[in-house]
Image (cartoon, rainbow, N blue to C red; front, side, top):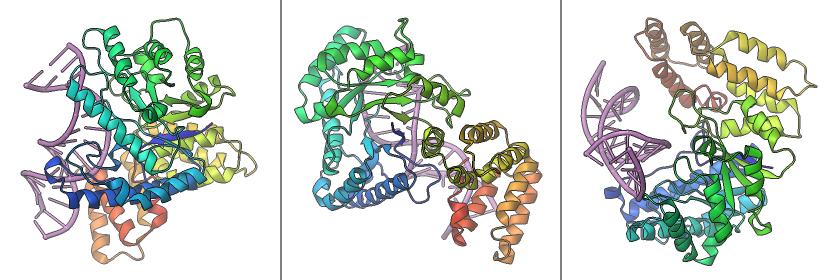
Length: 418
DNA sequence: TGACGTCAAGATCCG
DNA sequence: CGGATCTTGACGTCA
């Protein structure tokens, strides 16, 4: 059982990917971006290992225009050493990675050029995993594609195009239900014909259900049967609906109660769970801490040290509740801790609390800050209290100070994330 | 023809 | 001029 997250990090300094627009994609520019992005990936893998996160989706944007004729660089040769080093870290830590071409990679398109580009894109993804030296347990996840007014013939076209793919790509490909066209029953049916494993996505299934009486657990069991020995453990996608946005939008953070209900349904099965959520690694750590057998309170204390100002600026009551909860060092109240945290995160920020938290953060610099920085802080605080300034601006200023005075503890905290 | 989703780049504005 | 904020881009399908 592994729990992981997709592509990007939240609150981890210096782990941004870079890109450029088409017209600026010169060989020099691309080389510079690739070098930067590989360094970023390396740091993210290090971060994952340090945080015991052993499931991760590598961003398709690793190589800008990676499957486009615009990028003719032999990046897999020029950067082979960097790829090898990263790949070794992944293997040594027993991390499992995946890739997921976006909604615009459409293998079953009736437009020959679109389908051709999809094949090129799959080859690009495969080449990254190859360059990392990873076997076929590290999957590429793909949706079936469009319907074009005739689902069954479009499904057949998917099957036909899949059949023409290189054998080595087929070994890595897994297919997933989507939120508008191909539901989980459709995908399982296609899987029966092409023998590709199926990724069950719970939110897609909620929005685009198969209209059968099957329950979630049964779909997951059906999908499990499509995963062979050589494919590695079954993999599923888990996400929660953002209550404020349209159907299908991922929530900002994983609500731990909802996750635990789902997790208990999986009881005992060896299933890898890829979370799709805006706060990325933060929710992965949350879910790992609530399901780990290593129930040591230091895990929660380390989390608390990062969330402390996030909670303080929302709810003093939750702040006190968490402090109390973590007093007894022999217990491991993970779910209770994240319940309070989730509750705090749902609480809108009131000015008084935000000012209080900002003053705590200011405490890191108040002895070293220059007079003009102090004046600036007081001015921004005053303006914020008067409603003349967004909290975001005040935080940006504090973030600049944290960077200047190298307050890593603060920079590693989640105060600037939410 | 624009919405969909996603993110950072690029463009523009502001003090 | 630097920093903040707004707009565009890159992809394909569907209404």
